[in-house]
Length: 128
Image 1: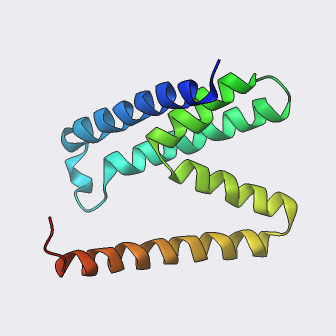
Image 2 (image 1 turned 90 degrees about the vertical axis):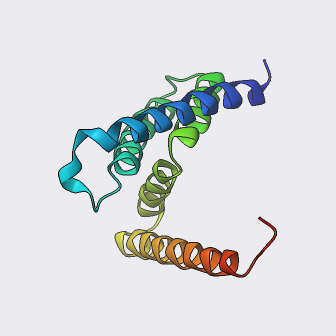
């Protein structure tokens, strides 16, 4: 079957779960009002599940269609944070802890800078 089909089904499911977590987290723990609890929970859940799937794939316990459905689709729809976490571990496995930490810090700083830059651009963009 087509890989795209599995990615779309998994992605839609992951995205829907992320929305449910976000929607329900608004009433769960209001004591953490400064922390985006829904995003945090989705990211941690996605990271855990992607790590689980990655190990299964490395041990040849997953079919390709299962990887596309669950890792690429579901985890990708749930969060891209889980993919970043996997890549940090892979950098560590292939190089060193220093390179993994540098990659993590660079990714985080760049992401925040790009987000901020996008917000600044949107302030001056009147099409929407």
